[in-house]
Structure formats: C-alpha cells, structure tokens
Image (cartoon, rainbow, N blue to C red):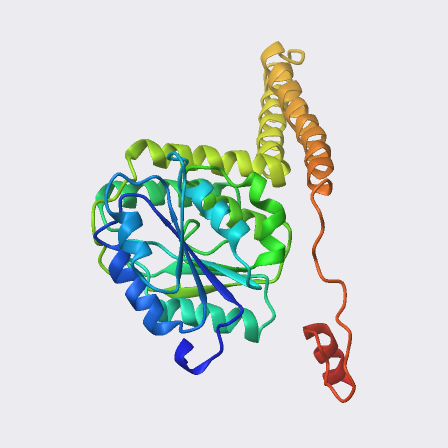
Length: 319
C-alpha cells in the first residue's frame, strides 16, 4: 500500500538539512508526489550552499533556518516542536530514504496503534567509515543487551508526536539522535515495531566523520546510564565479585593461606559497582519521573464500536 491510497493529513515529515543542495530537491519532489496532504518541514541548519533556496522553491513545503549551525539532532527537535500533526516522521535530505518505506512505516503505526516504527536497513553502509562505525555501535549495543534489531541508528522512523516530544531535551544536538530515541522507546516499554527498509544511493557528500562514530558510542553509553544504569554496572559488579571470590577461595584452599589482599580488593570493587548501579538507578528513575507522562491509559468507547485497544480485542476474543 502506498500513501497515494491512504490519508496522510495527520502526518508531519521532518527533514534536517545541512549543505544538501544536490539532494534536497530530489528528496522533496519524491515526497510531494507521494504524500499529497502531509506536512513537510525542512530545517536548514545554516547551510553555506543553496539548500534553503532549493527547499523554499517547492510549494507546500515549510522551511525553517537556524541562525547558526546546531547539529542534526537540534534540527530534528526544531522540526518536531514545529510540527502540527499527530504523527511525526524523520526523513533524510540526501535521497537515501525511499518514500515507499516511509509509507509502510506510517501504515504500520496507525494500523497497529503503536508509539513508534523504526526503520531497519537491510543493505550495507554507504562507505567503509560509516560501516565500521555502525558495526562498533552494534557491538556496544549487544554488549549492553539492547534488543533493538540489527540497526540501532537508522534515521527513518515515525513517532506519535505527543509521545516523543517530552524526550526532546534528552536528544543530543549533533548526531546520535536515532540511538537515543531508540533506547527511549525500548526502555520506556512503549509498543513499537521495526520495519525493514532499503536505502537508495546518496546524493552529495556525507558530513559524517570518523569522530562522530565515537561520539555516537559515547551517546549510547550516556543514554544507557540515564535509562538503564543497571545494564552497565551490574554485569561489571557481578564479574568482579565472582573473580575476586574464586581467586581468593582457590588460594585459600590450594595454598592453605588466608584470603589474599588482591582478591579482597577485586571482590570489594565488584560490590561497589553493584551499589553504584543501585544508586544511579534510583537517580535515573527520579529524573525520568520528572518528565510528563503522556501514555494513554484508556480510550473512551463509542456506541456500537468494537474493542478500541489491543488488550480489549484480546479479552473480546477470549470471551
């Protein structure tokens, strides 16, 4: 199903753009052809080329321009706060994303009453540096037991706007916005889905550098420490206590000596890490509880209507 056959009047598409004069025109033309009544917002992050003029020449496209370069994440936050529709999607300005993939994500979030649908690219990275960076990010994510598919930082995604807006202050201004929002959705246990997509050839030069990959991994660690610090501290603590205990017992039993100082220090370090995890987990919950909770508790049923939520439908099926 394409968006030509569905109503997209409740959809806002946010496109961050920085020096994308070669790709922004093609991208907008495809979106305007596919999404006839969606709200399309381009955030020009103080480009030095004709990005702003090219986007502004397209009728029906809202174009905002930052007074100075702030970063991709800041552009996405500006766009989401400016959007006026119920659903807000992220879309790249370099032609890598395909409108038909966004149409499937949009249909899925509405059909299944989800909070977010996140793209999962099934083809490789556009260059070696980005491929290595994505591989390292996946490795860190798996080590922290983050179950978010094989693509943690795909930029094509769609949210219910009221659900993602409270977390805008947590999104970094530069890169890693995809990583952070993915973790937000997972750790808050919102109903989400992953949609397989394919990327098209990029138009123009990528602004992603090698150091941005390391910044992305640091952002992932910061996000984990904010939302689920026990994922980080507890495995380390358990590992250290186990090593210290086994080492101490082996020396005590085999050599007949008392508990060695080194084993005691390692054991104590493990206990300290677990205690640190408990403390930071409490601080994390306090901070997260300060955010407004926009989770819908229930939906009012109308006369003659069937079950309005997935839980209602399950109960109706059992009856």
